[in-house]
Image 1: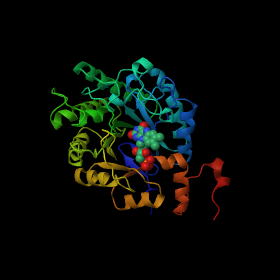
Image 2: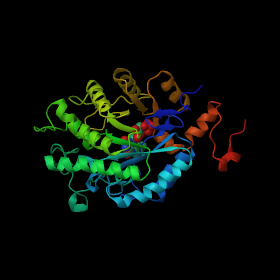
Image 3: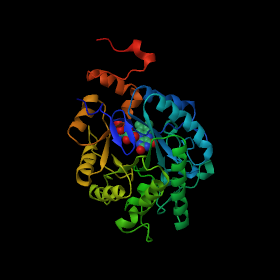
Image 4: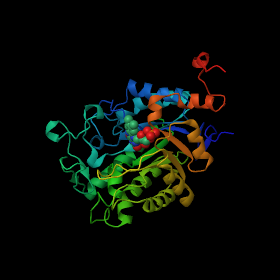
Length: 356
Ligand SMILES: Cc1cc2nc3c(=O)[nH]c(=O)nc-3n(C[C@H](O)[C@H](O)[C@H](O)COP(=O)(O)O)c2cc1C
């Protein structure tokens, strides 16, 4: 029996299978508002029968956007267009998730297809913020060090965004604490040189993520699962390590997180990532086995048998698929066919089913 195609229950939610569309920025929103692109993009992957479809990183404040065209959830105006999407996804028997994010010093950049470089405030960008005024690229505008009051306001933006996500009909929230964005910038000793209660010791560096987690858990329904994506390893000398990630996972679990989505890197430029098939799976496996929290594996998982094998070996609980889902929105439907499982084919598409 396939584990990948078995249902999976977290708190009050049952996912129909364990294939997850990983969060992927589309750089296609105006003023953070979801539009037809997001409906069709996310909707197609729900038609393709992934068990859970995540939106891209949705900014909790305008300054928290990576680019001016990021999705956002910083005002009530953002709720209705997102609701249209969650309603469609639910109509396909699929669950929906939203990733909440603040880009910190990595904000105010052009979309990748326009070069990806930072837009200075003079050229229509905005002033970035960070735990410590160190830019990501040397010629980026130096970010402003956040004051304690500003940190409190950011926590509140995450909490308000979570409330809106519930109203918009999402089944799951994921806090983005990976890839060198703001929460990761606080966690990392390479980007956080603060001397106050949000910096210095490991306990202090974790504080912002834990406060955001506690704040969100307090305002979302008890039965709603909460995920956190972390960069389990920074792949950089002096950076946050896997050993520390185990401690982060334990503390997140104590504070009501249900699953750690195990990614890595992108915190500093001087990183050395040994990219190969399944290279991040060992993080999901260790965190799952050593802290007894559910984990998601992600990164270069492109084949249905590869995904099944990770679950069979008990290395993770959910399989997040990124780029393969861009290439093939029907990854889960066609994969079921490859595994000789009767796929949950939409009735509209039945006449297109692969013939035996
Ligand atoms: C176009 C694109 C946009 C992405 N945007 C996000 C994002 O918004 N949040 C995030 O956590 N990861 C993001 N990622 C990373 C993916 O979620 C995933 O972790 C990564 O691509 C590795 O998985 P893959 O090898 O299956 O693509 C993005 C990746 C791509 C290709």
